[in-house]
Length: 220
Image (tube, rainbow, N blue to C red; front, side, top):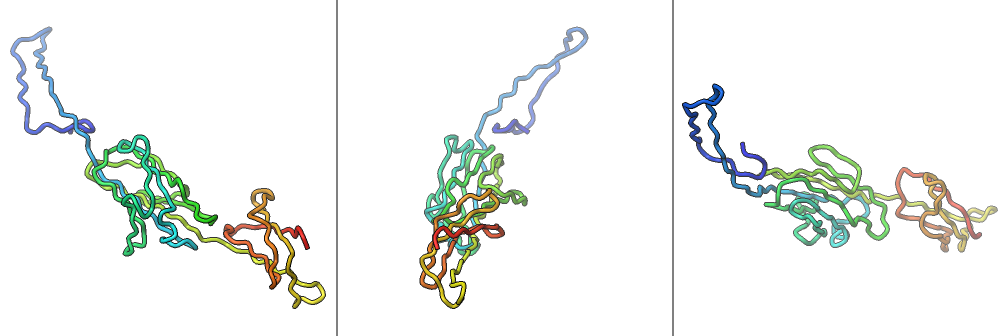
């Protein structure tokens, strides 16, 4: 077996031990030359879109940067172009990079926000799923294919506040203003102030599911 990125020699090499000795030891020396070559493999990146954003809406918007031996300065790939195309059979975007230099790569989803939608990102590699939008240490091996699956989940929540008359709940009140606050962050404002419409409703969209929010009426 040759060192990494070197061609192994073929056949057997004759090494003759001399009959003369030094300090009782007969020593043979042999210099063996190996030719250095750059081995290559394949990196495949897949992208699944879930929730309120369609694959078509994600096309041209979501971007990845891949950095490694083949792309030392980082290479940008955009869904729907750069060979990162949608496969209707699997329901995924697939980017296959063949004959790239072997070694360790970092893959980062550099753009994932679409029209203010909340998104949860996870990736799966070698059967292990991890939350996050960047993975390092992705090893491309000679003549093998390394697959990294990214998933963006744009499933989001919505809150509808209805403003009614205290004496007659059938009377809907328009013009009331509400601000939403995130309880988990210690009370940070979420989004913009929403005003009740003719049906007395103020609607907040693009919210994280499984999260508690507080509403404050800023104007009656």
